[in-house]
Structures are given as C-alpha cells and as structure tokens.
Length: 423
Ligand SMILES: [Zn+2]
Picture 1 (tube, rainbow, N blue to C red):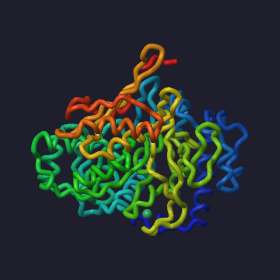
Picture 2: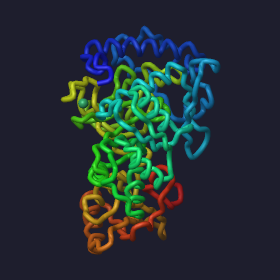
Picture 3: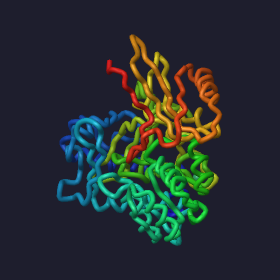
Picture 4: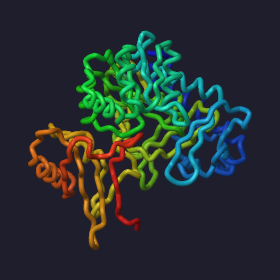
C-alpha cells in the first residue's frame, strides 16, 4: 500500500476524519458568496454526524456549466496553478481549477491506485490517454512520478508507434481509456505485430463503461491483469478509486471523497447493495470542492467491510452505465452494456458493435450492427436476436458485419446512434 496508515484506517477513526473534512469543506465553500447563495442558512457545525450530509442539496452538472469559468471555484484566481476541462456537446465546458495542493492530492490518490494495481517503482508505465485539458494523461503521470516509475508519455493516438515503443522500451504497465486496448489489439492484428513480444503485465483502464465480458477478452488477448479506475474531471480526474487484486469492487479513497448512492428519480439515498446514481463530495479539494455532486453514473455499494487486501475503503461495483445512457425503445428501457454482455458471450462476435435507432413510419426500428470474425456462423444473428428477446424483450434486427466496417472514433466508443426525431 502507498499509505497503509490511511488505507487501513478502521471505520471509526475514518468516519471522524470524514466528518472533520466535511466541515472544513463547508467552511471553505461558504466563504464564497456564490456558495452561500446556493446553501442559505447552512453552517459547518450543522454536520454533527456523517449522515447529516444528506440534508444538503445536490450539485448538478448544469450548475457547474453555468459557473464557467470560476463561478463556484474557491481559491481566488491567483490561487490556481492548473485547469482541466471536460467539454460537453452543448453549452459551456465544465472547468476544474486546481491549486498546488490539488495537484499534490491528485498525485497522492493516483499513487495509491497504482500500488493497489500492483505497480511499483521498477515498472515502465506507458500513458496513452491524452495530455491536455483532459485529465487522463496528467493524472497517470503525477501518480507515476510519485512512485518513481519510468514513464512513456505517448498520449493518445499513433497506435502503431504505441506498440513499437511498448515493445522496445519494455513497458510493463499500460494506462488507457477503456476501449483503447481494442485499438491496440486491432492494430496488432492488422500489422501482424507479435503481442507475445510485449512485456506488459498490468493494464489500468477507465473513463468509459467496459463490461466484465470485454474485460475478459482484453485480459486474454493482451495477456495482462486489468484494473478499473474511476474519477472524472469534476472530481479532479482519475484516482477517485480503483479495484485491487482481490477484485471485490472498486475501493474509493474515503478520506478524500465521500460517496453516496441515490435513487435517480427521487434523490433519496438507497441502501447498500441497491443500484442507483453515484453522488460524490470531495473532502480535500480546494479549487473546486464538490458538495453532493450528481455524476449520472450508475453503481452500488458492494461492501464497507475490510477487503481481503487489508484496505478498509468502501467498495463500489464497477460502473454499469449512466442515467443519461439509458435507451427507451418501444417502451422498453435498456442500457448499452446489457447488449454488449449478450453479444460478447458468443465466440466469433467482435467487441465492435453499434446500436442504431431509426424512426420508421409511425414507429421505430432498432438495428444492432456487430462485426464478426471470418468464418463466423451466420445463424448467430438469429440466436442473438432470440436472446435479446428473452432477456430484454427487445427484437432488434442483428446485422453481422465484416471486420473494419464499423467506424472507429478517435476518442471514446460510440455505441448508440439515435436517429429518431426528438420528442
Ligand atoms: Zn481490496
């Protein structure tokens, strides 16, 4: 462990620390007029127990957009050393300004994540997320620097060069957005690159939903052990948590982040074990502290008990999609990962797929385009259709496509193309 005294802290002292940091965070934000308007009448001393946090209102993505650039920030413009940003499709981007202490905090939680993934100072870490406004590249870099590991800061793209450097510099760890390993595998295949010539041992992937089935494939084909890392621009980038070798859920660094799971409809906190929307509060961030931020990510609390690895930090299930990813088709609700799970159960079916929704006459039509390996049994289309009917009450047309027929985006995978008119 990177900080065993904190990572193994038992529940009672941990909760005391959380409570203290909740009050400090409230004191910090309430020094800003924009926050006192948001939280009228709230005082730090009102938080007597951790549960009292639930009385505070949620912070939404829209509020963060409207606050662009520094509306909800808390350090004064002279206090910032860095910005990162996530751009949405509409309106202002969400800007996260970091103080020097925030950059240091990021390095600390990322170092913990690396160590939880079994990575140490003798590793060679290839960082494939971009270095720029996106948080991925720098986050992995700061953590690696803390460890004293060797870094290959390739950033995004140039997959052929990535493979060459990975092999020639004997990278043992690859970090990436979760579908990038698929690009690596594809490039290796297209160029007859021998994956056995790599020294890779560990992959740390995040920033996109990736099903357990996809994980199995990536691990098998790249011959690595993977770890699922979470975190987003708003929370200060990757490093909110990661799954350890015991693979019993994603540890959240509770001395830095307080997480709750709420019913996406009512906003009420749900019981441990029940699925709902992840709400994150930051406990140590200075530039843009979050108080009950609604992430739209769906997950559940797996356990608050001590893990087999010895850590006490609570464990979340892997993210199962986003509240805004939910597709409603002919009155049936489903998430793209449910389709992915059904597809990847079949040998010969590729991880490249797209769900296309069209308007047709007065109704609507759903098509699943999926690439298959050469020689794949064509009757598989009917079998997938039947399974989706049984599992999800969906009856899409399933079209088997040849390798390379589905367009590859530069960044995150595009799983749903909805051409239906907006209602
Ligand atoms: Zn663990």
